[in-house]
Length: 222
Image 1 (cartoon, rainbow, N blue to C red):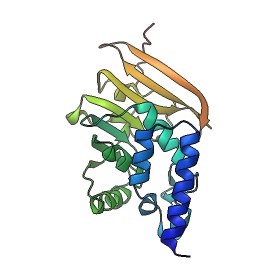
Image 2 (cartoon, one colour; image 1 turned 180 degrees about the horizontal axis):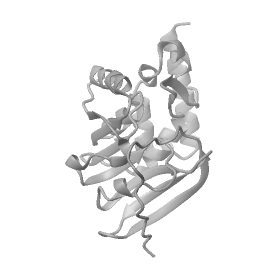
Image 3 (tube, one colour; image 1 turned 180 degrees about the vertical axis):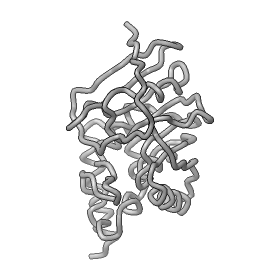
């Protein structure tokens, strides 16, 4: 039995499971299109469609497929939108966003992970802007964004990122210490943000910042 057959069977089983868990058709199609095995270390490729996170080096992981799908659904991405991603990692979430038609800027603090992700994405015909830097500060030169997604656990809602949203824009970020709730923040106007928190719990690697913390807090719209 070939590796390709094993991977395809595993992919179909995963997609069926995600569909049963309520993932939207658009996101399922993106997951079907992007070869997850290209974004994991070679030794782990046969595990690419297990619904689990996998190590990619530097203490980082590629997120569980359900988590990627859930966050992408919550983000509600549409073709042509400007999306900022914090935490490129291997580039898998980046590839999903690009496949959905977004224009993506993605930030990674490890330069070799960023370069490997860039090469993998380019080999698949995907051309996001990959930036090595401090994700906590976002990327103001390309702001404002329609969407922002953070793929690491923030200790609190990162307002330095929320302020880079357009009015009406959405940010999805896991918030918490040992485990996290998923937050969706919608910018209502210049100073107000609507905040939604999911009941589900997730586990991400920490969102490491190199700059001093921002002391400003979210103003939730009533």
